[in-house]
Image (tube, rainbow, N blue to C red; front, side, top):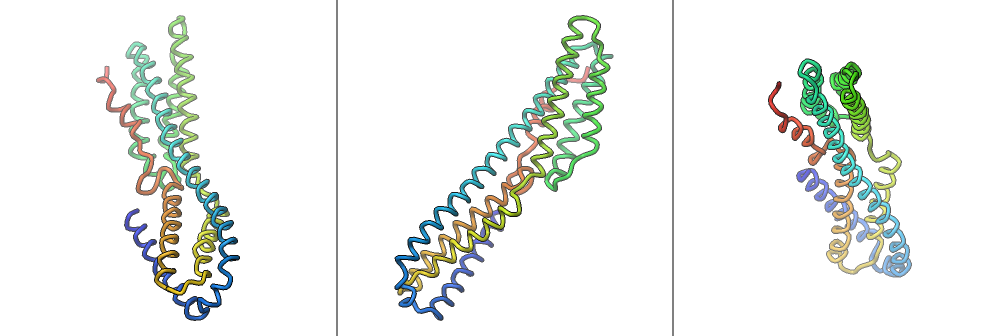
Length: 252
């Protein structure tokens, strides 16, 4: 992301410099200076509208990343509760569910998580959810204690499946195309409009326009990086599932 950001920043600075040179050459600053007051009023309105839109998207994307991270811990917590319910049963009854829970966490970490970076899912992880559900449904429920464990386990596997569906949905979500168009058009107008002001010094004008272009470009890079929570240079990691696996007791 650092390299990409530097390249984009350099490109924006170069683009602003070229455009400012062309504007200064073909439209003298004295001509543009006459309209500075009106242009300033229009630019203030335009800048506020774009800042609100860009800020809304950044905050929304940040919230989506935090929601994805929190949801991964919810899923892992339900998996852990399911495992410990199986552990409370005699080995011949609980061991299959214990093994499936451990295998599910491993598959999620090693197979499904990398696939989610590309918006894909793991059929094996899906099959393991079905297997856990079948194993829960086959648990004994003759005594009051067994009935309690069965009801709790069924609730945990249902919540786990729901959290997984939400995780997969979050991996495929992103900023709508129409909103990306609005962000890019708004960026071009916001930065480009500064070139219409009339300043006698080209360097002073460049020092006003270029930092604004860099700031807007950096914000758009940030939105792009947060657009898909499980991809990019700072994605949501499967830490919750690592914690689950690392704290398991020895196999019975």
